[in-house]
Length: 437
Image (cartoon, rainbow, N blue to C red; front, side, top):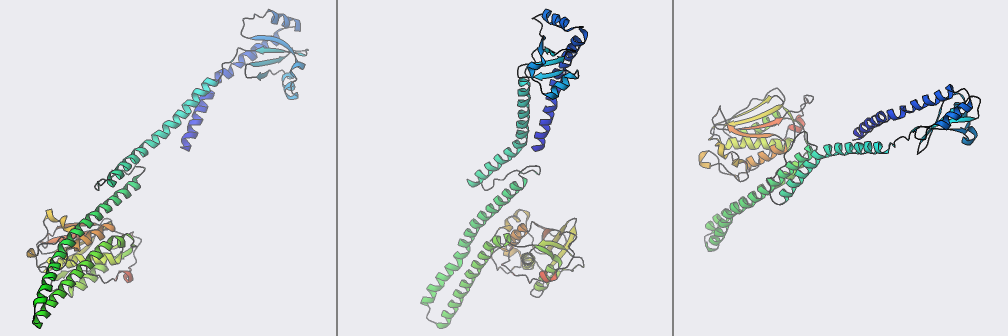
């Protein structure tokens, strides 16, 4: 805006002086007329006669005035005495004075009244401010349009249209704000959907153990045999433990958003984390996990604990649903690092893959060798951790093993980060209720 103002001011200034140059240079003609009169006459009386005979209708006015009448400063007296015409300008007219030889009088020549420059100056000033306003509107219009669109989307979102988003463009003045609004809207929508799903799941998953507890208590009151009572008490204890485990899983998932939003990120070697998870699960499973730790480092900016949880969840899920073989691999593709986990289980149909990312959605136990334990939170947790790490979580079909294939696509850290931070990467992964594909 500052450069535009300076540029317009300079341009109109040049235009103004270009337009009034003709009027300013027009005085040269009157200077020539006055000099000719002074030099051509032979005597003062002859000049006086010319002035007396000068027609009144002539726009150029001539008269003789005494030098003493003007009381000119010494500098101007020297100028007029040197033979140079003196130009005096007032608000109403312009006066040209010429010195006469051997005389104390001066020839006064008044050219026709010069048209006031005020209209031209006003017009140019209006053009100048009109140009400034046009530039301001040209600059503000896209900004105002994006702000109005953002305001409408925010209002609609506040009225309950949680799928409302703002269209973004990289050249928009509000690109970062619009992206943040969309991210916020997506997070709020996810939280609301999760809360509804959690409430529905809690009411569903707690209903069964509560019914068993009520039924067990009734039977316990009627039982007289100590062995039978002990058996009922054990069942009641197991049901309470199941309810307690469910509540812990719910709290862990509810806290995940807060923990992830505050997590610090640092360069980690994914190869070390995968190796730790494979070693941990290999000791507890009789299934073959094919993993060859590469000498190459796979560095990404992330939080080691949650990435370890993500890897462990995917591996445990593959162990639960795979028949006998699991394959784990890491490879780079351009500026991305791809973690791929495959199994030889029943796989996941394409139409069910998005559904499996929701909490409390479990795979069909009859289609796999899974134990049936857990609450269907595994892939939901993986999806949430991947989302907060700005990584892509892709579910597909394994071409090698025929079962499910899970890919996590991370952004590779800068090539300048080459130090192997094993001390921060050696995090024993924790298992969090993984049972769904």
